[in-house]
Amino acid sequence: MKTERRSILKRLFASAAGAIGLGVTAKAAATSEPTAVSTVAEKEVFNVVNYQDVPLFSLSTKMGNLVFVAGIGYHKEGDIKVHTDEVLKELEKQLIKAGSSMEKVLKVSVFLHDLNDYKAMNEVYKGRFGSKPPVRTTVAVYGGVPGDSLVEMDCIAYI
Image 1 (cartoon, rainbow, N blue to C red):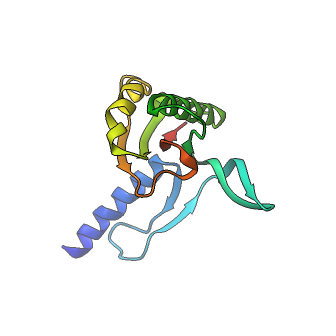
Image 2: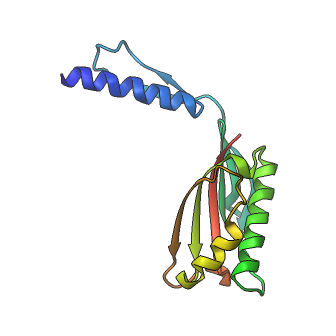
């Protein structure tokens, strides 16, 4: 029973890994040998931000058919609606540079300076990802979003 369950899990993992662009090598389903995972494509990074001549982070990274966009905030004057609009515009620019789009976003994380801005942020956010919106997590950040932004967002998309 345990071996059968392990075999089912291996097949499930192999099909999921294939769907996201990872190559998977598995032994016969009846064996209990570990599954080896290897990447098919190299990671691509875009717009690397340096700190004192040392790479700190990339604004976006591609691996296989997935795009990961780093947290983007808006560091100028304006209310939550202005900040949300500018952040979404910048997210879209990063997605397009990486070969994706807002309609292909799978997951968004929203970090609010103040949870009282939730409703106003939603008003601007609504409809920006097409008719099939991504899953989303929204949290208020203790101590505020870095750089005095009222909102920061990151996302994961496919190409």
